[in-house]
Image (tube, rainbow, N blue to C red; front, side, top):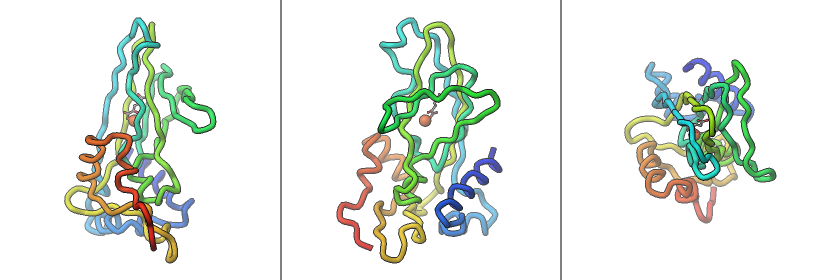
Length: 189
Ligand SMILES: O=C(O)CCC(=O)C(=O)O
Ligand SMILES: [Fe+2]
């Protein structure tokens, strides 16, 4: 899973014209042979619900991660929010994994690749299980910030530096307003 996550990150960064080496803390971690960012697995279980229209399995949220790799069983339930369409169901495809961009990547990319708002519905007749591989930020007092090469020499960094733990605390406190809370009001380069 780690290899897949690394490969995905490389591909997405490549599409922005940068590499992992352009993320200062990631480059340092790689050089010292330590893991780039913290990893966790989350198991979600959604029991059968007699009135699914009146309940929510997992409320709308963005993941705080760099990216999340999700395996949903053959039961649908995951929905993503698309500005033009509203809530769109991500139908399960046998053998496929879902990749969600998280807030940390949103910050690194200076908002160019936004984190995805998603939620999980419950079902009236069948329970559902999903497994999420969460790739988070660095431990300690390392600061996360938009990648300078993406911001560009005359561009403006849209998010202020913050440590991973501070961001998680902020997310806990203000939930879906966390990205707005670290957004620079009048950005200058
Ligand atoms: O169960 C799902 O499909 C979504 C799970 C999820 O969004 C999460 O674990 O963060
Ligand atoms: Fe999620």
